[in-house]
Amino acid sequence: MGVYWWRRPTLPPALLLFIASVFLSRVYWKIAGTTIRFEQLMAMLLFACFFLELLRKKILFRLQWQVVLVLALFPLMLLSSLLLSPVPWQSLKKSLVYLPYFLAFLSMVHYLSAAEKLWEAWRVFYVFGAAAISLSVIGFYLLYFDINAGMVRAEYGSLWLRGTVVAPNIMGSSAVIIFLAALCRLTSRNAGQKKRRMMHMAVLAVSFAAAMMSCSRGAWAGVLLGMLVVAGWRGRKLALKSTAAVLLLILGSCVFVYHTTTENKWLKIEKKSDISMGEFGEAKIDEFVNPEVNTMRMEIKGTNYKEKIGGLPGSEDSIKWRFNVLKVALKDWRLSPI
Image 1 (cartoon, rainbow, N blue to C red):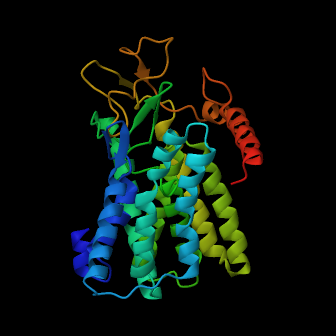
Image 2: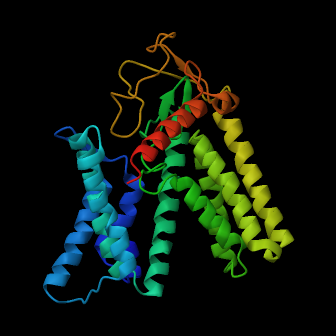
């Protein structure tokens, strides 16, 4: 990150830190029963830098009505928690978690007000995201050499890529977002030089692999729907040759990941008492979830994608369960629209 800022010092270092922290949301600390995430600390740091510049009168800042409307969501959340929740103090505590993000938003409104700085921020997001996802994918394949980098989660006898930098909570599935960003760059008329195009193709392949290896049906749906949206958006502007190359690249990435992560003779790991395998920061909690098998001798043979699509073994259909939650939420909303 320091090298990036040194080469392109167009954005404040605190803003670069905040963007980078989005891909490290698995780094957190539990303090007084509350989870404090690294990205929340970086959000507060960004706001502190902005506020100090404001106090020293180094910058001028005026609130626009659109910004006020967004910021007004936070006091509305607090009021609804205190006045309308059946457990007001717990709800209030949960609402306060979003304060750093609102403050970071206020800071970014100023720092990214210029169009060229906004584009630079998206470029930073793309570069850092591609690097973070690449590290996750590398961390997964290091398991082939018996090296556990803490980027893999073991559940139901399968290894999933659900590590430090795959699914941060602030931006949804980062692998899907970076995949779609690379797809948009490759399908635009100004795809850039050959060297840059090759980099975008590498990012496309790795981010698609990460989304597939995450074993998240939401990520899979995001990739498919996103591809349809990009195809419809580009319309007739899509070049047949470049589109075919992109589709072949996606297909090749899919075949490679499926071949190397499904049950096979190479990927066979036995859990040992002195080795913890889990998400970053949750190694002791994230145990194998399968009570019918002796977890200390359980072997990991790969991912069963058909089983994942059909529903997790030993549990009720998660898709049906989520719709039940939505029904309850809709009923609560009718009772209290605020």
